[in-house]
Image 1 (cartoon, rainbow, N blue to C red):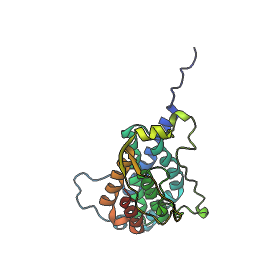
Image 2: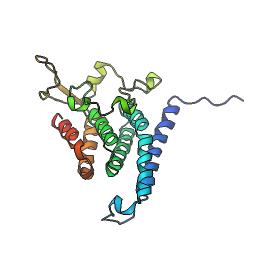
Image 3: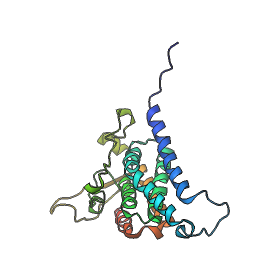
Image 4: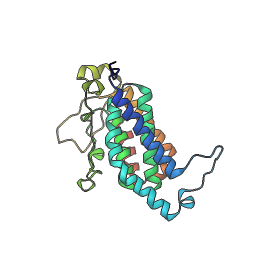
Length: 225
């Protein structure tokens, strides 16, 4: 008897489920299960000992590079709205955990990844290219699904396909990141761009107190949408 054939996309589906479970597990380890009916939860530093805080910081420091490198191309590759929503929720959760622990570099990386997904490809916005992932962090952040094997999983559609997905067109704001005399074309937003923008707004609304300096990234991105 021959083994059954593995369906196309099975590997990426397993990886997708594992990534979401990793974020969920880290969230449970740091914050614990939510209390039903709890309207005013106690601040994190009042409930976690110094030893626990050190452990939680190590959990983030050990995992954030791999997670942001895996989740970012998943947003690009996703063709299903619910899959995109689940990935965005995981990124929101992880960014909020980084903010609670006052880990600025990973927090800014996850927020920047959501901001990039909110804008059209190759949009020239200097605030998103300021190098929060420095070489010293040895963090390889993949983009445009370039490290996903198998073209069928990639969203790297051609220019004509991209134009068919456009749901809104606008005029780009001037930006200092462009060379003098260079003009940007119209801003064409897809449904996925708008979905990511809603996730960014939700993050700012629900977790604004822990955004700190990353408010600059969020507001600059929203200004261009």
